Image 1 (cartoon, rainbow, N blue to C red):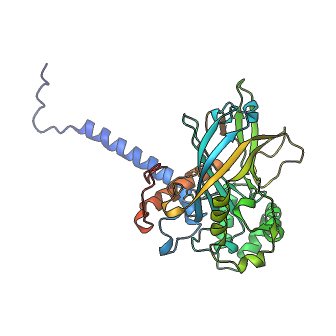
Image 2 (cartoon, rainbow, N blue to C red):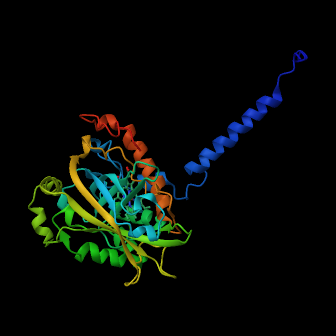
Image 3 (spheres, helix red, strand yellow):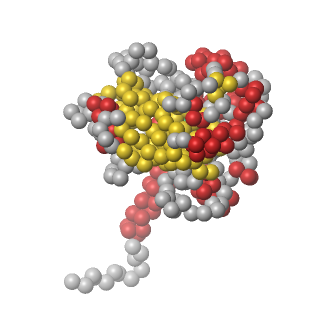
Length: 358
Ligand code: HEM
């Protein structure tokens, strides 16, 4: 049936008002999500901005852990973690390719290798089936703060020109002391290959029967650890760590054991600044084998976002608030650096990622 003709002079107000209402609601939702309606709320944009603006020659790089080098290899499961997680990559005999990145915990891309205390390892395990797992770990044994809000306060204090800002932060956050002690008095190594990398955040794993446990994990190096005087690192070239790991892996693959630690009742699972008591159950889940190093500019890790919430079936986030905060902050950093890709051009396209993976 054809529609009845509308009486002359009467505009279709109701449909237009409906569209306007939808636009207002959507605009409000975006403003809320962007933090414009609550300027005091900690947003991912504020967190990322707190790392500071990159120098012009650092555009296109990560907003933290900006300096790094790519590796590829594989993860060979021991089968032992199948007892706590049904994730396919932990099944006995499973093996999956890995794209990873050794990195330094600094927003300053041009930092000399000896000047940065925190070293990181990022892994993206990609089985040939659903079940990808990404993790970004550091060599510190504990995190400096308890909450994302305290991390924001730490970034503001450490970036402040006010000489008193850090002492005031430390006085107001006594939980910072163990990290401070590690950072100032802990041992140094002369190689990415000799570091133990710790996930620090707590996650939950679910086994085949549906039982849920809370875990943290670490990568334990197979290479013998030789502690060095940091003063000797100062005499080395600014990119000495990158050259050393390239030479070492060219000579022989390097290995780490992925070890899970299972929380007991009452352990502080929501606070990565607090270690769990010694003697907790540990499970050696398998071996990470690193067999190739590539410069980041043309390497397969450059365009990966090592978002810690990319988890396979059999692993989920826990009551630890950091992974969600990290996920949203990493997305902001990823979006900025990929939008600046022209400032950090590739010299070739990496076939596996096509240069556009996330
Ligand atoms: C709220 C807390 C945190 C914030 C805001 C934050 C922020 C960031 C940002 C913006 C990046 C760059 C991401 C990219 O462009 O892809 C990054 C990278 C990284 N972060 Fe965090 N981070 C936090 C906590 C942590 C924790 C707890 C760890 C270790 C346990 C960690 C380890 C790393 C590592 C290893 C990388 C390098 C990842 C890569 O190779 O792409 N971060 N972080």
